[in-house]
Length: 150
Image 1 (cartoon, rainbow, N blue to C red):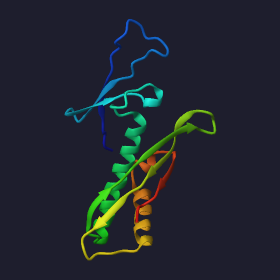
Image 2: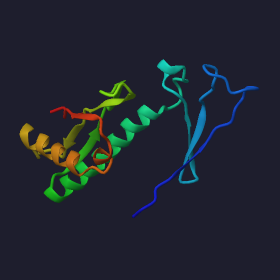
Image 3: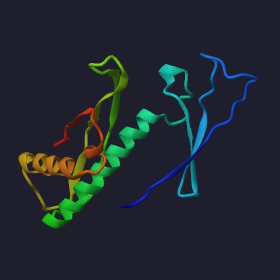
Image 4: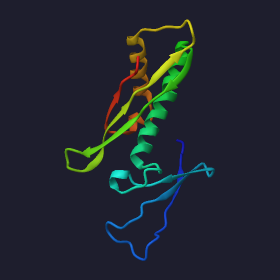
């Protein structure tokens, strides 16, 4: 099994750790190379210029889905030229009353080399296969919706 990791660093910038007064800003470092500022979602008092865990989850799902889709498209001989997505994460309460990411939505848009065409049903089936084989999708219990832009 692979171990894939990040490093997270946070320090208190106030004299005491007090409820409602926590600065959640932190740094997330990937591969000891790239550092990304992290914070709570803006609705929870976070900095809108930093990424939040819910966005990171949506980005992770979107990225995994794309890579799985591209691998399957390559096997099928589909000449994918571009791939874009708009991913969304929705917060809500579970049936146990706990806050969670309750839904993740992907809206991928794929374009192909000139002269290549497939049906809307074929692209939807390929996205369904990509979803089924995506490591991240298989790790998340939230409802997921893939709505390819055809």
